[in-house]
Amino acid sequence: MEDLFHRLSHPFPTVVIDRVTEVEGGKRAKAVKRITANESYLAGHFPGEPIVPGVLTLEGIIQSALVLVEESHSRGKLICSLEKVDRVRFKRAIVPGDLVEFLVDLTNREGDLWVFKGRARVGEETAAEANLVLKVVVRDVGFEL
Amino acid sequence: MMENREIQSILPHRYPFLLVDRLLEIEPGKKGLGIKNLTASEWFFPGHHSYPPALLLESLAQVGGIVLGSKARSEDPQSQFTGLFAGVSDFHFTRCPIVGEQVTLKVEATQSLASLYRFSAEVFVEQEKIAGGQILLSFVRRASGSPGSEPAGSR
Image (cartoon, rainbow over all chains, first blue to last red):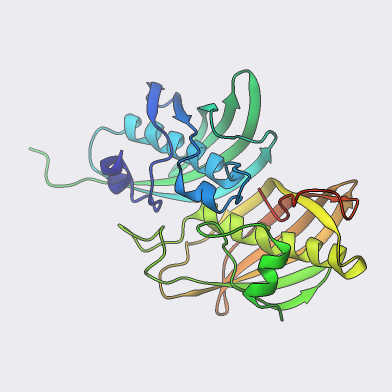
């Protein structure tokens, strides 16, 4: 995953998702993360009351979208940047012991802009939703013969 | 002006998730102008130089949490409250701030419906606007003196 981030130029220090459980290039991806009390950010969010910050759940959706971009382009260096987020809703607290599943669908592509609909759920409950727009620029490396 | 010490009396956020340093201006319940300095020793910088967009949203939400929390405290110094990050709408990023920059976080309450507060939010580095949109916070006051200190600010 670190290699993946490097390839996609994604500025986040940690991999939020544990495993990609399903990915279909150009269409959808699913990934999971287990939440444990031992994660560093929970020390400050909040002392004595660990709750996963909503923005880290959003980051999980973003990283799942990046996996989908990666799977759709097998070659070259990809420069990805987050252009827009919309309709983001945090609906349920996520706490240690939970298993979070991230589901991302590519809904539209216009030039460099990829539009995704994402969701995070715990069991059958929706914990968060978000629409994302990523700008994806492909830089081919080397020559084709 | 509000220094970090006072921010910590309103927000329950602590290291490594306290993402605002100081408020230059604050109008309780209405608006706030906060700053976040970015320096190389912070936990999110190894391997790259950009402040991640997800954390930028959190910084804005924390300024919003201070705006709402400071109003509750001005009306009742003992007041207890719970603030949650409820959502983001139509938020655009032009670029990420980078190491060595100071991020200016500007939020202004535009609408409230029951416990839900909508803010317009803008991010600047010096005079350059680099991101902006709307954020939603849920904020609930509880009877003062009730046990436990619940999280204020944003989730």
